[in-house]
Length: 343
Ligand SMILES: C[S@@+](CC[C@H](N)C(=O)[O-])C[C@H]1O[C@@H](n2cnc3c(N)ncnc32)[C@H](O)[C@@H]1O
Image 1 (cartoon, rainbow, N blue to C red):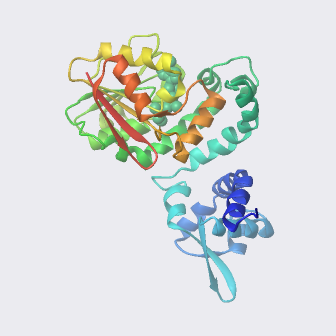
Image 2 (cartoon, rainbow, N blue to C red; image 1 turned 180 degrees about the horizontal axis):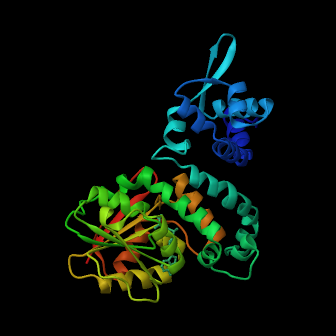
Image 3 (cartoon, helix red, strand yellow; image 1 turned 30 degrees about the vertical axis):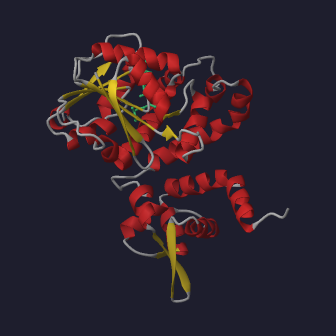
C-alpha cells in the first residue's frame, strides 16, 4: 500500500507539531503580532526585524512560517513582501488584545513543552512525573507551582487566558441569574470570576484557593468592590468551604481521580441548601472516547502532571449522581462544556 497524499500530510504535520508550538511562542515572545497590530497595516520583514531588534534573515524565516500557519498574511508592495496580522493573530496572539492567549502559549512553551519529554515514562508507569518536571521530591504539582513566585505567576496567568475566550460561552450556557452568592472553588486568578460578574451583575463571587494562590491573585486583582469579587484561602478537600448558592468547579475535577472527585462533590452537596447548584466546566470526551482533540490533549496532560483525567458525559453523570445531585444537564461549547446539577 502506498502512502496517500492525505497520509503524508497528517504524518508530516504531526511529526513536526512541536515546532509549530515554538514558531507561535517565538513570534509572540518577540512581539511580532503586537508590532503589526499597533502599526495597523503591513510592514516589510526588514522593518519588523529592525523594530524588534532581530536578524533580518531569522525574522524573514519566522514571518514566512507564520504565513503558512495562518497567523500572518503576506502581500506584495513595490516588489517586496509585506506582512500583516490575520484576524486570529489580532484576536489571540497580540498581547494587548483582551482575548490574548499569549500567556497560555508561554506556559505551553516554557513548562508543558519541556515536560512532555517525560510522557513515555508517564505512560510506562501509569503515573504523573511531577518530581522529574520540577527536579524535586515534592509530588504535588500545586505545591511545586506555589513554591516559586515566578512559576506560580506563569501558571495563573496561563489559566486565566482561557476565560477571556471561552468564559462567556460556558457561563451563559445556563440561566444562573437566581444564584447571588457564588463560590469558585480552585478559582485561581479572578479571570473566570470577572467574566461571571459581568454576565450576572447581581452576583458576588468568592474565589477559594490555596493560600499562596489567593495571595498572588489578590495582589493582581482589581478592587473587589467594583467587580464584586472576594478571596478566601483554604484547602477545599480538608477545610470548611464558604457558604454559597452556586459552587463552580472549573478545570478542577479533571485534576483528580474518581475517589477525590466524589469526596469533593459530596462535600459540596452537603454544603448546598435545596435548590442550590454546582457548575462544572471541563472538556468532555465523546462516549466512544474517539475525541474531541482538546479532551484527548488535556487527558494526556493530566497523566503527565496530575492524577486526573478527562471524562465522558456518562462519567460526570455517575459522579454527580453518586454525590446526590439531580437534574444534571450538559451544554457543549467550542472547547469546554458546562455541566450543571442541583440539590
Ligand atoms: C487547573 S487550575 C484551575 C484554575 C481555575 N479554576 C481555571 O479554570 O482557570 C486548579 C486550581 O485548583 C487549585 N487547587 C488545587 N488543589 C486545591 C485544594 N486542595 N484546595 C483549594 N484549591 C486547590 C489550584 O491552586 C488551582 O488554582
